[in-house]
Image (tube, helix red, strand yellow):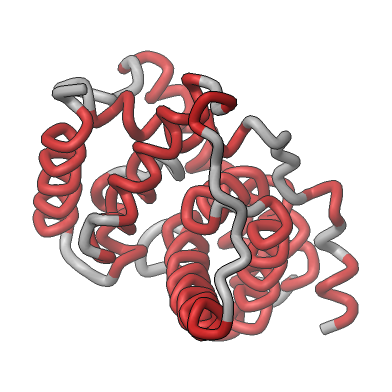
Length: 228
């Protein structure tokens, strides 16, 4: 595994400035305020074509047993979007970088069992989703135990919080109040940019159910954020 880890350097992981987490969450709020957050058709076709070519190349490497090169290609192609996804779930750059590393190394271990049942991108995001969910649950438990002892978290001064930060915090709070399954679906759809089919693969559900989860999530977000 050390060899696999060496292929995934810190430079491959999404580098997100302090303000980026605000923009990432605010983008989801923007989607919630609109009827359609889809990309333009021309741009989507070109992007999907490039993704498909890269995915085929990676799948060919996996099928040939060249796992080191497959891991390297996965890191180059997917580390940044995986980082944005993990950031959306955790709100922490350090934690998101660690989770991207864990995701890629878990994928390296699982390459021998990969059967190409869906896109390699959706498969990777499915691994990231599970790791982020486990991480978030454990973190929440730790924080709950710490609060029982003493809550030392600083209280924000509303007068010093910029409008965009307030907006991002409202959006993040609204996301946190969603059902976990709906939150995962909407983040995978609009933060990771997965198609509904890929969201279904990542979440272990069919495409129709993925569409319903995203639709319900957007409805709840619009209800909470649309009347401000």
